[in-house]
Amino acid sequence: MMRGSFWLTRCFGACQSLCGSPSLRPQSVPHRLRPSLIPGTSFSSSTDTLVSRFCQKFTDLKDYALPNASWSPEMMRLYKEFLEKTKDGEWVKLPSFKSNSDHIRGLKLPDGFITTSDKEDYRIFTRCIEKEGQGYEYVIFFHPSKKESICLFQPGPYLEGAPGYAHGGSLTALVDETFSKTAYLSGHGLFTLNLNIKFKNPIPVGSVALLKVEVEKIEDQKIFLSCIALSPDEQMLFAKASGVFLQLELEEQE
Amino acid sequence: MMRGSFWLTRCFGACQSLCGSPSLRPQSVPHRLRPSLIPGTSFSSSTDTLVSRFCQKFTDLKDYALPNASWSPEMMRLYKEFLEKTKDGEWVKLPSFKSNSDHIRGLKLPDGFITTSDKEDYRIFTRCIEKEGQGYEYVIFFHPSKKESICLFQPGPYLEGAPGYAHGGSLTALVDETFSKTAYLSGHGLFTLNLNIKFKNPIPVGSVALLKVEVEKIEDQKIFLSCIALSPDEQMLFAKASGVFLQLELEEQE
Image (tube, rainbow over all chains, first blue to last red; front, side, top):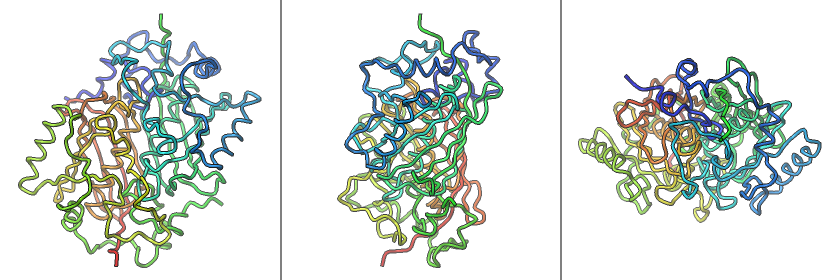
């Protein structure tokens, strides 16, 4: 028999889709998780607390979601426009570190989780190409009370699919990443259960796409999200996507 | 009104998902494509012809789907096992070049398509990290008569999602890439219309996953594919996916 629930029984799975999107079979969750990791319908941390922790102002870590010389005038214009919206506190700019281990510092990984060393050179997939402008350039803004995100995305030439255009897989991976951060901050959404994407038009390398993500509903310990990827003038639809995440709260390290 | 069919009207979209997965709205295809690009139910090239062209034996291009020092003993064992199966001609090992421009040499891109220069440093997304073992290590074997593929995948530490595990987006992108090559060789499948993935268990960085892809049916100029991602012993299910591609034949360059 195929072991479809290994992740549940051995690793207890927490923090997985904050950090990507491996996931679980929802129907089997309540039976198998340790008591301390039982997904709950109420959580000790609110969205504001989660955001406040996620966006710590003082850190020695490099934030990759900041402008660099490769950003086009259009990318810069949009960045400034959304940065302006953070001034009244309604929107927040999310930092983006090299590894998800940095994002979850101080939180406890479940027993059975692979232990990685800080000395090893791990990188979050959407920050895998460090050379500015060659790979992913993106920044996510989050609106805590509306539970919405906007991701500004400028694909570089190493993300190519068809000659001159971003690979559909590169867009899908960034949709997953934007979903995962939105789901986490909106209510401890940690595991992607499902991801669906319909492609409409390809994104030229070097251009800018807006990924608009919304939490549609939170029900039965699941967070349902939607995404539309558009041109900045909102006249060109690149793709539509939906995703489902499982809620699970990480414990503080002792 | 949002221009959802820009790709159709301006670029005529061919070769797009051989090379990634931007795509089209199937219902609008027959009205808009130029006569020479009308998707047909019959094609001049058979699977054997397509495979023969795709797997040219003499080329100066680097094939990235060959063993290197980063491949684990398990990856090597599986590679040798499938390579053995190519000897009777039932399976073929697909080459993997740096860019899709190399894969479609000699074929004509539709008018309106972005023109890229060979001198520019473009890379197909799933070969974006050149340093051996850090990113994607994979090789695809294709069975022309069964229209099936096997992709051996060893994720490196730059594909991380949760600490120690491959990002779900990295798996999804490789599923898309394996789908696209399979759809193309099985019958001119060029544009991803839809991609759906359900995650079951995460893939540890450095381990090996098997992606088993099958063409489920070809109907109404669409190719329907399925994928299961498994551990090599086939006891652990990582993910299940499905995809739909639109058929479109590329013309020879004059």
